[in-house]
Image: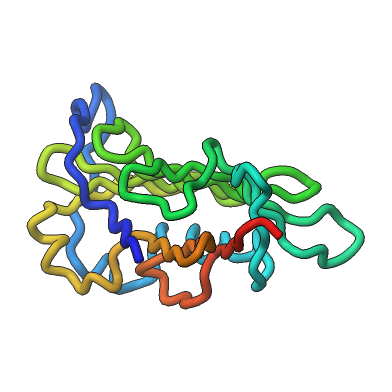
Length: 192
C-alpha cells in the first residue's frame, strides 16, 4: 500500500503576493474537526458506485458496471496507470459521468508548484502544498490556512489530508485519508 500524505518538499515561490492577506495559522485541532478538506473529499464519494470497475486494455480508463440508463461512470487518467504504480507515478484523474466531470484529482508531486488539487465542480477546489517549512491549505472559498510541517507531524496522522493507493495483481484502490469515511473513492480491476 502506498500512502500519499502530502508532506513533500517543493520549490514553491512566495506565499503571499501584494494585497493578499497571509494564511491563517492553524493547529492540530483544525484537522480533528470537519474542515474544507473533509467537506470536498467526502463529497466526491457520490461520483463513483460502491463497486469495482475494470481498466481498459491501455489502463487509461476504468469503467464502473452499468447502473442504469445513463452512461457508466468512469475514471479517466491523464497517463496510463502502471500495473503496480510506484512513488514516481503522477496521479491525475477525473471521474466522468454522462453529464460531465464529477471530480478531478491531481498530485503534481515533489517539485510541483501546485501540490495537490481536488476539484469538485459543485463546491470548488481544495489545494495543498508545501511552502518553505509550512503546509498551506487553500479552501474552496479561497480561505488559506498554514501550519508548520514540524507541528503537522505531531498531529494525529489519521486526521491529516492524504490518500492511500492499494495495488494487488493489477487491481488498484484509491482511498482518502483523514476524512472519517472508510469507503474507497474508486477501485479498478485488470482488463477482462
